[in-house]
Length: 198
Image (cartoon, rainbow, N blue to C red; front, side, top):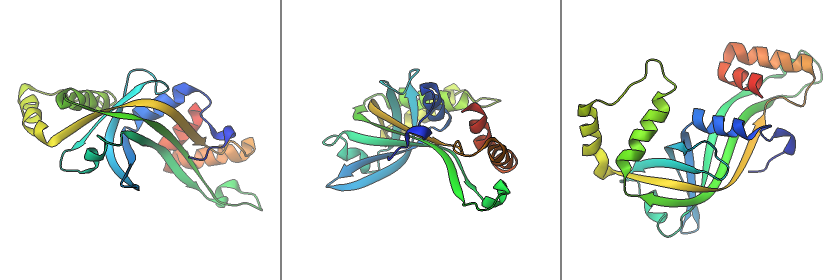
């Protein structure tokens, strides 16, 4: 990903938070010289993305995972909140439209895992931790998980590099920035919240 230094995450903790809050990622690798991508749940395994590991799983029926045995280098893309910024929000002329967004790209070496049940359960735990009320697997649900395991492939990504783009209207004056933020508060509250935290 091409990155502008002024749009990099101001704090590595923001990268960690974006990955935790947006666990539905895009895993990209090369198969026979062509890029292949799969949308899958991927969670942070530990406290930090930088120097850390990620856990994920996908359907065994998806042939993408077979290429990882011989070509384990992957790109994992996490997309945060994003939104179009109309020139009407600026209330100035001249003005041009833009797009505000946050994204994290992680490269690393993928390792296939034997214990898919642990990865699935940890994924559910990570996603449910932010919900109220949260769901906890019953013994019957755990048995259902076990019945589905032959159709699941689990993996770990050992993170090599991390790139981030938090392009959130940082390059405009305070008055127009406030207008953009207020517009998102009404239409896209997750993006407004990210602007408040950045």
